[in-house]
Image (tube, rainbow, N blue to C red; front, side, top):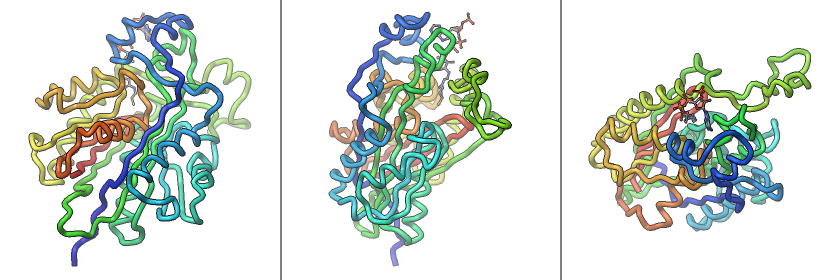
Length: 336
Ligand code: COA
């Protein structure tokens, strides 16, 4: 009997229409196009304009992925949605997507592993499929950051980096021995001791007697805070580590990988990682220049872009690597 493997059978992405340039941000805070481009590689990002919420973004991306996989919403067995910016604190975003897609009473849940959330979600979906419990899982990464950032000089270190967007894939059982496509290996890690190095403190149920107060709002605890250099140093160490680990687990050589999809947090981080491993830049597609850091959505958005551009051929190898708050980091090795 052939073991069941999972493969990606369709991809989709969606971003809101409103383009926010670095120059526009420079009118609202003490920053400049030059500073942002030089430190992060970002030229512009997308922000919602009040007419769309996370579930709208997630729905567009999901419908595109389902269409590409030639699968109807009634044919999926679960929805796993990664986000750090849920539609509402609970139940999150996935349940509203469940309703929008009009799926039957299949399970769904939000998964919180920040910028590594898509790869963690892929691991969960892969487990459901390989156990034989499910045939098809919709895996989504969706973020609306723009309504949670501080667009003043106090918040400039994070406000300039993040953007809004959604990406989705259909992960499907592959039990055809003649089809080599599949998720070959996925490795994940976390280091909770650094949970406060990149975080959003409030509202939080650790506060007593209220999760959020006027004082907390005045202090800006509801905006993300980050120790940028500390995050940078850990990202450029952990990403190569987990990439090597996943390549070993898949029995694949680094040189055999055709496309390295790194989380789009900062172009400098990715250039540093690629350079340290001797990976040629042409194997590292990027869209951070146009979208900024879309956290859990970044990798599926980038994947969809290169697939639709015809850059990924059957049989090629992809390595997807993320690093994010938590800290969390992960790599998936995929044969297309
Ligand atoms: N515009 C202009 N100046 C800014 C700024 C902005 N948007 N944001 C911060 N600065 C200032 C700082 O206040 C600091 O000023 P000071 O020297 O007077 O104190 C100066 O620029 C340098 O700040 P620093 O944090 O040392 O810059 P850096 O070279 O480390 O670059 C990051 C900052 C955020 C781009 C970089 O640290 C980074 O990319 N870190 C990782 C971020 C990340 O990937 N996060 C998401 C992970 S999922």
